[in-house]
Amino acid sequence: MPLGKFHFQMFFYTGGGAFIDGYIIGIIAVALAVLQPQFDMSLTVVGMIAMAMYVGMFFGGILGGYLTDLIGRKKMFILDLSIFVIASIPQYFVTDPMQLVILRFILGFAAGADYPISATYMAEFAPSKHRGALLGGLIALWYVGYGMSFLVGYWMLALGEDSWRWMLASSAIPAIIILLARIKMPESPLWLASKGKEKGANAIIQGIFGKDVVLSESFEAKEKTSFMDMFKNGYGKWTLFIALFWTLQVAPAFAIATFIPEVLGQLGFADGNKEYLGSTIMSLFYLVGLIPAVYLVEKIGRRPVLIWPFLVSAIILVILGITSSWQMSFTYSITLFVIYGIFNTSMNIHQWIYPNELFPTKIRGTAVGFGTGMSRIGASLSTFLFPMILANYGLEMTLYVCAGLFFAGFLISLVMAPETRNMTLEQTSALNKSNDKLSNKPDSKTGII
Image (cartoon, rainbow, N blue to C red; front, top):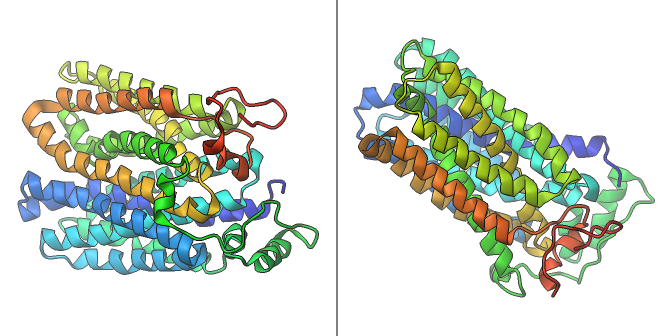
């Protein structure tokens, strides 16, 4: 089907979870700066609060992805957003840091579950020629949420000592709005067909696109969802690739994002709330990276839009590390962080593209959830260790460590990343069955490698 109004509607409904995820991750960065002196928290406790969400995302991704394939996309949509609402509000009333750790874990569980739900839903409705842009574009709403959190947090600083309570509880507002919107969403026709309900699947399709439209993908009746299928029949190499590149993207990026006010403070911008203003400016400019990325991923392919941003991100952090003690200007530091963020954002779109394209419908959500979970192990460790490395070894060494992780991602992607541009989901999920070596030159007519 051609790109239409329904696809854009689904884009915003599915991307709502990414918005909340970005908002929750961003708001804690501002809230921690206000919260830490009040509770006199050690670096270990600060690290636990920062990493709790990512630990929750590990369990949420693994379990949520499997349940998405087992019981359906829509049921998980409703359950997931309900958890967001229920866990957001009590953050206002916490009296002990460990209470906040528990609530952040629950929020992380919901965020981790939302990745496979949202991504698989969008992939299964998206036209082949626009699938990469639609899936990759979902990350834009993550950055909108992340940037919005700094604006809200910066504004709420004026509320005084309890401002952090309002900041953290404010995530309930977008969660309620998106929950109400998602109630109207239909079930995924591809999921229904994979469970032997092809008649119901075609009824949904015809209700949306017209009576002459039917499923184009063939299914074996009632395809069984098995968690271990990710590691069988040639899918193991894609499971490994997704876990590696996703982890090496988010581990340094989330650590920097969570503690960016502290990083800017160590660069000499701790006076007059400049570190918060700088964080807001940077997060808003990060969206710029999506504009060329969602275009190029369909124009030149998936591989180059993943490989080279890994390398550029590593180089920029090395430069920032070298000049970290030179007392450079605010404009210089922000400019480099903006360039880093633009390239980092452009490669992040693959978190939504590759996992959905390389696996069949019956295990698509399971695979996305597994990738989400594995990547959050790296994110949780990096956010836990980041403040300790920063305190014990300084900003320069911390930036070098982050750069090293990005460079490792560059090497792995150079070797393992396939090209899936212009292919249907049937074709991309069958790449593991081909004996041909992967090439980044798809056939000009079919896009098949």
